[in-house]
Length: 320
Image (tube, rainbow, N blue to C red; front, top):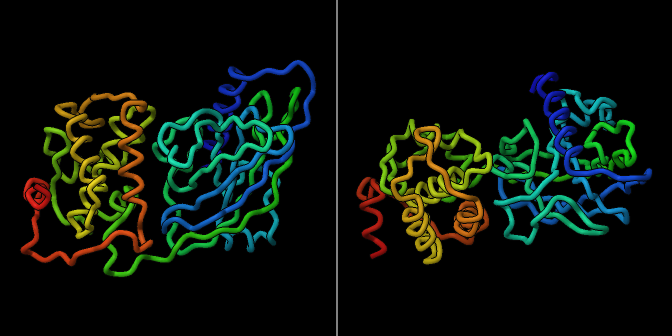
């Protein structure tokens, strides 16, 4: 990412937080802490951000880079947060997608914890970031976090409540590429591996979309449109099943409910359909939980052959 874009993102975040937060006296914010309780997939790293005694009332900023980059810099973070080696995400609002673990806000009370997934923020709300791509598979990373100041200046700045110091550096990694017989992948995998698709078209709701159209949908951030985020998870779920994943009944039910909810709405950027994230979040959660089981051994896979169903309509007959 180029430096001007990063500076623009930081400036936008400053304006946003200034509009939602103000304090009357200088407040010293404690640095949050970071932990990585588990590696969930090849494409993301799960992090727990826990606020200190002061809380993180204006949200927090997470920064990361690969361990190889960090080592090349002498295991020292660059002094300039806009350094191109640093990727970052500013968490300053309310999530509407990744809420399965109970995280409903990024504005943290004292000692409150937010569960976040770096590498799975493409569709999330309440975040400002130009680094929304999935993580690289089989890669070591370093992370750090700080509480945002009251004027939303993630770089520090002068304010009534300046940003906190950074946390200690947290080390974490993504899983190596999945075995060749793996059949469950995230939406990001399908977006970046069109050659692995088992079909060239899918039906979402009442509309059939070509692979080119589906890739355009996968490449469009939800930006608060629940229809787009639901379509992302629905595309991944259907491709996973068509690739041999044996979905539990709750997932088959969620797929059917998602199709009914989408109906004849045409998904952006192909059309201009819209659904509230509050309406779609429960289905998103069910489908994302299924799509994120990559490499965990919890989903059985059947080997697909040319005789297997090659359209979603044919596949549905298996579950009737």
